Image (cartoon, rainbow, N blue to C red; front, side, top):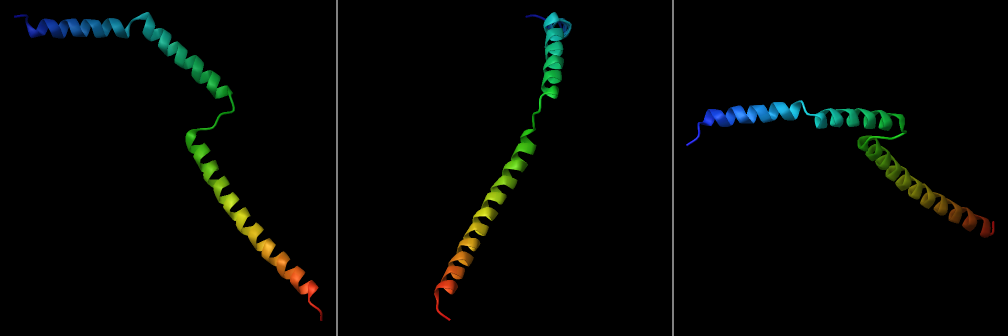
Amino acid sequence: MANPRIFDEIGSKISELAANSPARDIEKNLKAVLSGAFGKLDLVTREEFEVQREMLAHARQRLAELEARVAVLEADAVERDSTPD
């Protein structure tokens, strides 16, 4: 049976090679380039988007309530104008 220490040494060598590989450098460089490109765009975070969505939903609800109030007030005004004094 093989010595477990050999497996540990092989595993550490593979990890060391993977950490120093050109693919790792390419990944780091690509992340930096993408971060820079996204930083220049006018984007919002998901959290900011959700906050704005909630505010818009609240504004729409409030607008519907105010439109209903205006409709009632207009109906009352028309009724008062149409009744004889």
